[in-house]
Length: 497
Image (cartoon, rainbow, N blue to C red):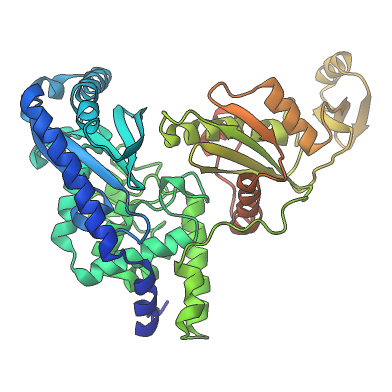
């Protein structure tokens, strides 16, 4: 596929997505203010701090988009001060690091922040281990503890916590980009964001393209255009900085079950593309085809904005659709949203299984699909079926008629028997014949213990309407010629494929 973005289009889009000088200065000022306050107090409390640095796109990499200038400030503790960690089991490591970073927050970070006057929405939150989140002058800030692990130890032992790789990621990106590649990274970030498929808040799929995976792809494929050309082959051909074959990579524990493989250049045993969902990938590939079609028709920069400039998810055409049904939940803001997202995904898989199959295994509501969408800590799960109203009875197949003993036992344990073809059948009465009634019943009988139920099929909820729009106009489109593997693990456990 030949692809070349016209220079006029490139310049126009970059003029809209690159951060302003004011944003960059503000980010640097806030990060410096926090760093100075923490280091000053640490002269008293004496944590073995190796460095304090803003990581992520707004740090040294400077690959952020305009208006997305949040700060991830990392406090790295010297790994050499905790050598016992290398010999601990995983569970012991997690407890040790959780307790250590709890002390770091309580005795250093929070007291240091208390001296800064323009902090709002301050909260100690929890993911793998505790961290601090806040706002300063409308800029969202996370302060996260990690270990400063030397590269050779990281290669041999791996990280202690999930965020320990982040400084190494920063170093790799900074060492391998120039201004053109930096802008190329921004172009594809903007493309995936406008496609609702960027990051762990992606509306399409469980998780979209991460910033680091985009940076690695842009660097290894040498630019935006090459990324666009090669992305459709990524599901078949892994991208490996270490130049190993797919056969070699699939021998690595953990790689075998991954849909996409983008090997982390800082860790040959880690897949930086593991969290990218099939749905996000397929939808972005679909959007690339649409963009390529536009290239053959127009060079007007304004027409390309639809592919690079994020717009809120529309809500047209879904308000009263009988095939769509949604539920609203609210989660605890002190718990990281990805924890709730994953819990809700598992819950929705169970509910989808209940909707699609009778307890005897026969199909109930056909073509059941769902999608999850959230904003802040308000969550929605929307369901679709091709037939929202089904018959009051269904046929449960019994043994073949030639098996006389089995047929007799089947007739003794079931009423309303009929013989059709080579089998005996039982006519069973359904518990639910309406899609919306079945969902309402299940949610009220089996409410998730990790959420507050806020509403059911609320036609005034923008969140739920946006979720329905994504399900109807994006998810169903990419599933037309593909199996829905969204609950693959759950279906296998239940014996369904």
